[in-house]
Image (cartoon, rainbow, N blue to C red):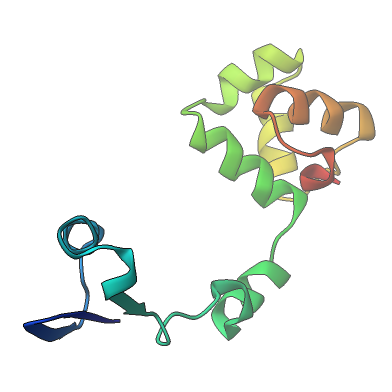
Length: 119
């Protein structure tokens, strides 16, 4: 990242990882029109090979595990909410059992995400 400030009699630039707090301070002091931020080194993560590889490995079960852990819920707690067993939750998370449409809708409502994440 490059930040350049141009306002007479000051002309300087900073390169590297620059905290947003510093950039906003420069903008406040010198005005938006005098501070230029070049982010040419930034890359969309979804276009990177590692992301595409991870995304191709996504399964409904892995998504279920991700969202369950994200909210800090155990398999037993989730099983109680869905009226099923801990073993069935484990089987879904490990892709040994498919997630039904009905269960996918319940999970989507529970985790406030799209049903498509579990189908």
